[in-house]
Figure 1: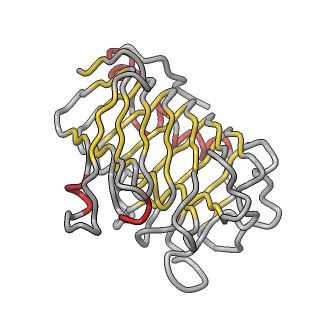
Figure 2: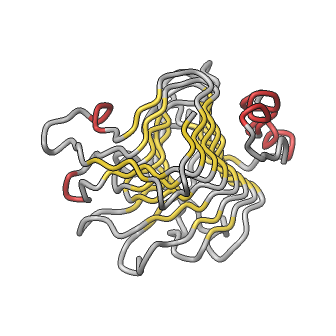
Length: 255
């Protein structure tokens, strides 16, 4: 367990990065491997800057990890939700390219997601989920979050995500999206389209960036029912009622 004096008061900071020769996994300022880890009122930062490309602030591969009121700040690859079950509540998450990524089963709930100014010529992509097998119970679930720009991003295209792997799975539910989100919503990893095997969905989001009218026409971008959306909640996705309650963080179990 790690308890700080506040998300902007107690900050772990470093600047390891890919350009200077460190593999992405090892660039993490703070890395968590132990089951049932809890962080509360903490900040995690990688200050390498956008020109250093992959530079992780927080990497977690621990099962049943809980982050409550934490500040996660970098540019590319800020939050590496590597594997196992994870929960983030009332956190502030900042970044540019693929800044919430990995292949865990993660629910990000009641958080502020703040894309910021990338390196010149780059596009912002909030998520890059890495599911490689259809039988994996993994994905990124963003529920009841606020998605708004940090600074002036009028010259930057910002997307909800792009498919890192063939079964990439990402769902935005009941979140508020400001108007800076590109109307297409999603970006291919390469080429002009995405694998038909991905599972992307937007469910009951609000705000000027939430309209799905002009979204990309991909087979893998689904329209889902409440029943399908419930599979990406704390209860349906993480079986998390008991272990999150034990961690002392507030949470909403269902939709």
